[in-house]
Image (tube, rainbow, N blue to C red; front, top):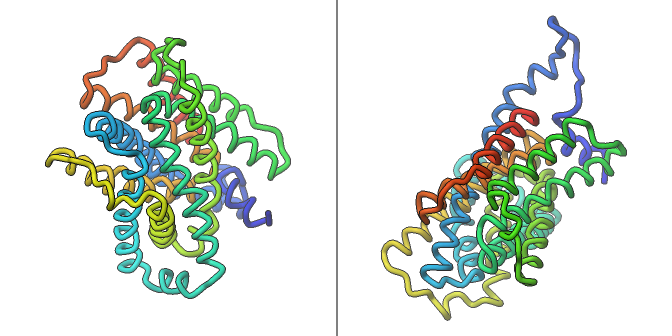
Length: 322
C-alpha cells in the first residue's frame, strides 16, 4: 500500500498547510466544509441503509422474497441510476474508466468483493436473524477498520477513537437488543452471515476510495453494481423465479432500489471519501437508529429504555468523531 492510500485513509487526521490567525492552518480551514459535508453524507447513507434493512425484512418475511433474488434486483436496476448520473455529470470520467483496462479490473474487484459480498451477506444475515441483530454484527467492522488504519499508519489507536468505538458498540448493542442478552442467541448460519457482513462492511469502507477519487462516485458504483449483478444473476437466475408481489410489494422493491441502494451507497461512499474510512465506519452506525425507528413505524416495535440509552450513545459518538 502506497503513501496515497495512507492519505486516503487518514485524510481528516492530518494538519498541514500554512499558518493563519486563530491557531488554525489554511489546510484545516479548507477541510472544515468538506469534513462537515462528509459527516452529513455518511450519516444520511447510514440512515437510508437502516430504513432499507426494515424494508428488506418486510419483503423477505411478509412476501417470501428470496434474499439472493432481492440482491440481484437491486444491483441490476440501481446500476443504471448510478450510470445515468455519471453520464450526465461526469461523462469524461465514465468514458475514461471504460477505456482503462486497469480501472475496469479494479471496479470489477469492488463489484465482487465490496458490493456483491455486502449485499448478499447483509440480506442473508437479516433473513436468518433480523435487521437489528444483523446490524449489531455488521458494526464489528468498526474495530476491523480501526485496526487496519492503525496498522497501515503504524500507530496506536487514539483515545477519541477508542472511546468512539466503545460508544458505537455499546449504543448499537442497546438499540438492537434493548440490553436483553437473550436477543443475541443466533443460529449458526445467522452468526456466520453476520460476521461475513462485518468483513464486507470493512472492505466497503476501504477498497473503493482510490477508485472513487480517480473516476468518481457514480461511475465506480454504477459499473461495480452492474458487474456484481451480472455475476450474481448467472448463479441465481432471478428471471426464473419471480416473487408473487402485489402493488405494495413492488412499491417496497422500488423504494429499496432507489433510496436504500442507490441513495444509500452514493451518499455513504461519497461521505467516506471526504471523512476517511475510520470516521466513516463509525458514523455509519447511524444505521441502527433508523432501523429501530422504521421498525416502530412499519412493524409496530416499541422503544425500551435500552433503546433510548443506545440513541444517546450513538449521538454522543457522532459528536465525538465529527
